[in-house]
Amino acid sequence: ASPPFSAIAPAAPAAGRTGPFGRRVGRVAMLRAARGTGRALQGLPGRSSAPCLTRQPSAALTAGGTRGLVNAETMGTVMRVDQGKWSAFMFGRERQLLIHVVNTAEEGNAESVMSAMDTFWNETFKMEGTDSWSIRGDLIDRVIKDKKPRRCMEIGTYCGYSSLRIARNLPAEGLLVSIELDPLFAAIATKIVEHAGLEHKVKILMGTVEQRTDNILSCFKNMSKAGTSVDFLLCDHSKELFVPDLKLLEEKGIAGPGTVVMGDTTVYPGEAARAGGGDLLSYFATNPKYRVQEHIGTHQASGMTVSEWVHLP
Image (cartoon, rainbow, N blue to C red):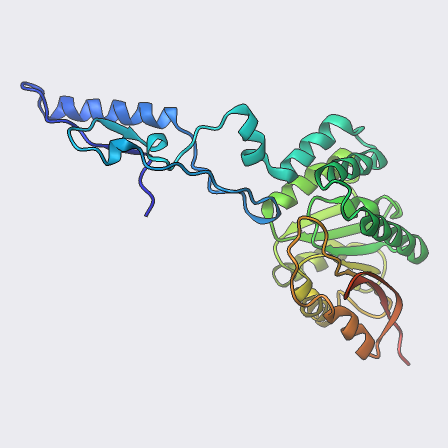
């Protein structure tokens, strides 16, 4: 188990210093030690994971003789964070993105926000993956403009870039409901959408599709169009969940006749390659209710697929 934030190894009490005084000294020492240390850096979770810094145990822990106060920083469980390390370990890529957007993009201008996000990611990943990302963006724009959807859903918000891409082209009464598992990413995406001035068209829900089906239905129930199925669905989360989550949405009536589904199985910089990327295309190809409208290969078996649930006789 990890040691506590402070460890007290008192010397023998001086003559005349009885229990109450000794306990008071211990409490003051512990308070000072706690104030002098920060939280233990265990690395940031998810796509912004950073390595954990450790130190070798201090000689104070191994040397013989009488020991005084040994605080957690000395023991190596807590490390002071200077200004240079603060950004890398306490902010991470996604937090830095939000700061960059707020500082450089025009508030209320979705185009300016997306441009700031493009600039940040291009600099972060040295332009790697730019071609696939541009193709993806153009494809989303084309599908939204051709389909003219009012009800849209996205699985996998991340920082909200695709949410902006979809929402900016929706009609005044249009709505995008986006699902994000990671609370941090959901919070960052919410602020980015607000900065772009599109919060009235985007609703971000935290959790999984299975957890949020009732909430999704509730978000769309007050819209005037009959039925509950969405017009456009973007699958952009864990690739092995594309087909299971799509089947669940079909069962709940959220995906139905007329729904256009776009799935992107491309592995972008910063993502881990996972199995299941080819399942979505196979599902569409073998399911008679879907008609594949477009498939763009990006890398080996990866690619972007657009398919529509057709109205069968």
